[in-house]
Length: 185
Image (cartoon, rainbow, N blue to C red; front, side, top):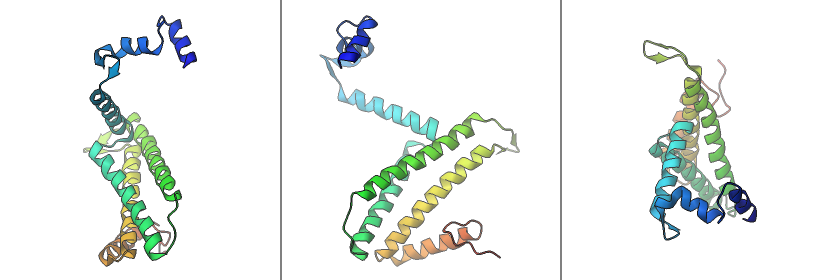
């Protein structure tokens, strides 16, 4: 903190961080205590801007995306404990966080290219390959999460979901190698 105060004093804030914060957000500060509601609103606004402008998500889509990841990890842990009789480890939580981060970075990169590269529209259809790539990647990620979640639910005794996961895999394996078992005709 000493170094921060030193740098701020170079800019004329002799009292350091408190004077700087008062100058920047004095209207929001109430007797040197920042209003919690304003902090929550500011964080929500920044999060919404980041999600929409950089990752291409609206907030409900983001929460649905996070729900899918958490549901897939939670049911995977349940399968490990109840079906496979394994002990719970902290590793799946770290894997979930890494998975969320990896998915968001891939989608962020694809979305930045899609928004930054201009391509013509023909008959109302975008010819921008990065827009197509963004939606293909997003669709692939969401389908992979649904399939994994359905498979986990099937292992937990919900047979309908295992059937649904199998149906989705069979349909997509006609075009893609979605689960590594594409049949060559």
